[in-house]
Length: 168
Image (cartoon, rainbow, N blue to C red; front, side, top):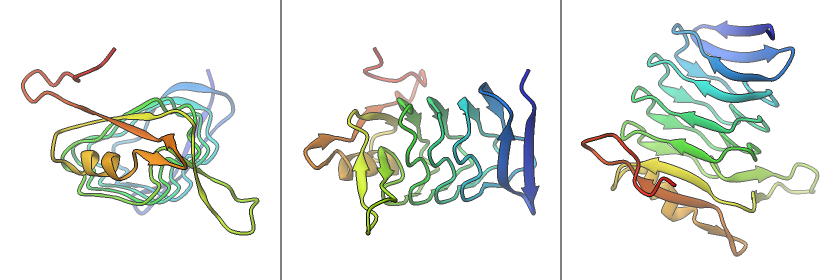
């Protein structure tokens, strides 16, 4: 089993480290925010975020191998580039509690080697699950296409059963 290290400062998870790939990571309950680059280049499949977290900071999961994540109802903010470079991310569930999603937060990667930074799409869409009329739907509609490439796709979560429409 891979060793996991969480560095937490004043309620912010500032760094996650592991010596090998981990299929599922559980963030400790005492974490209030996931800091900038906390999971930078982390080798993880899924991250489980506790209800204590209210913010996912800029670049929190930059270039991470993350495949899937569900954002808890406690989170209100997802900052710019939060999931940039997560090319394995196929789906993300965003609750109504999220009232702010920063530019290029989902579905993009940064090209740092250019003389200027430029958001570039992954080449295949990330499916964003959420409720109709939510910030998740707004973000998806504003970020459907970039350079003629499909970036995001919105799928509605049904209110009664909590199931996702259009899940195949």
